[in-house]
Length: 366
Ligand SMILES: NC(=O)c1ccc[n+]([C@@H]2O[C@H](COP(=O)([O-])OP(=O)(O)OC[C@H]3O[C@@H](n4cnc5c(N)ncnc54)[C@H](OP(=O)(O)O)[C@@H]3O)[C@@H](O)[C@H]2O)c1
Ligand SMILES: [Zn+2]
Image 1 (cartoon, rainbow, N blue to C red):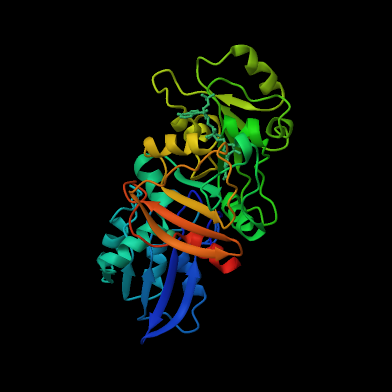
Image 2: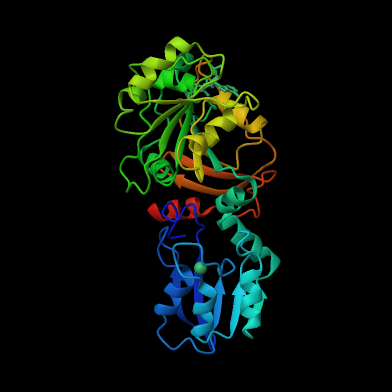
């Protein structure tokens, strides 16, 4: 898990070398382009790995068209005699070929039990979703009061969560490729959507979903667009007069191709046709956008922060209802807030009802 936010678009991978029932080396893939988990664990071994077993969360790689040398020959040369893998690598360059190459070298290869295998797949769910469906992993997050409100009187901005919960949210922002909001949130809250108070592992693009191109030229997102990447995803029917002023201020304005009119998908793919593909997208929606993502089946994971305060104002907008098909995977108390994590069991990004790596690592901040 130590590589989260740094390894993408690669998956997080961990490896443990065991000899005579004793762990002699551990390693993980820490950063994109850097050494993989297996050579890291081998070099960290306190004893010779000859005759040892390597436990790896993902099938070791065997292809050469990449930044680092393949791990299978390294395991063979190190004298490893058994490899236990968490799951197969869906990358077409590997996908079973790593296992075959190990077996050809007379190394025993075993799989972990099914339940553990599902947990290994959940660990790399964003990688699997990208490999199989060419889309990013999508997390939604919102905060709500004890009486289920997400903003103040008539939708006015209201700071609901406390400092500790906010720090958690910033760790999630810091490992995301994009932070997505709906146009109403821009109009009411004027957010800046930056990573604050935690190490910035990545610089997320800030994405506004705005079909009618109503993003104000003087909002904070636009005013900072020359310093921080900012994208407005609109539709072909938006007034063209609003286009130029945004572009002049450094905003990239994109829209879905005519044959694919879904702006939600366009927002998730914004990197695809503009820059690099997104691996992980964080949506910070109001109730309208949250329901749209639920309806489109485009949310893989949900973080809801519950504050213990009620505001008792009928004009305040009410949070979206968490759909029945979201399974709770974690709950964490943070002062006056409780963070609850859910996974969408109907999504292609679901493999096991276990807390995500982001949730587990956020716990360490406590
Ligand atoms: N507590 C929290 O965590 C939190 C987080 C965010 C916001 N908020 C609050 O939520 C309120 C705003 O929420 P909201 O629900 O009104 O707005 P929103 O979710 O910010 O944006 C909704 C807008 O997105 C646009 N949109 C684009 N594509 C869409 C699609 N496929 N389906 C639906 N909408 C689409 C629509 O505007 P167009 O038709 O013009 O495109 C729609 O009105 C504010 O009061 C804000 O303070 C709270
Ligand atoms: Zn490798």
